[in-house]
Length: 116
Image (cartoon, rainbow, N blue to C red):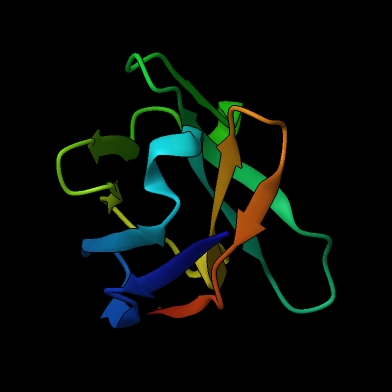
């Protein structure tokens, strides 16, 4: 089992920045990839970014250049740096990890609200 605790969400004005963190605990040795998803009101949950154990990343095309994912394997933590935020980035952001045994786990979500 892997437990995930997210932090760093909040209210920010358009053009501002936020950095989300997601710390994993439990069976951290089994973690392979780590990533972030988001879900806006009335919309489906969507992938924001993902980073593999080796550091390879992929992003939602629309977010490239504004969002940066990184991870600290020593701390079992994944980060999401969000710059030049827009009101349409308002959503609940969820951390997700995939294990070497093809299981996956979700965090509880953290609210990001961008005011215009």
